[in-house]
Length: 57
Image (tube, rainbow, N blue to C red):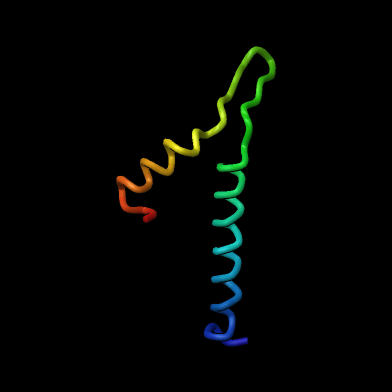
């Protein structure tokens, strides 16, 4: 296949990966283990920051 024919495939892979990262960040829950606690991402605050930086509308 030519490079031009492969471009849509690579674009689809990039978009799928990006979506997977967003899903993992926004659907994560607070977890604890071995004496440590990792807080889930505060969605409202994150959206506010993204709007301030004009990443989303």
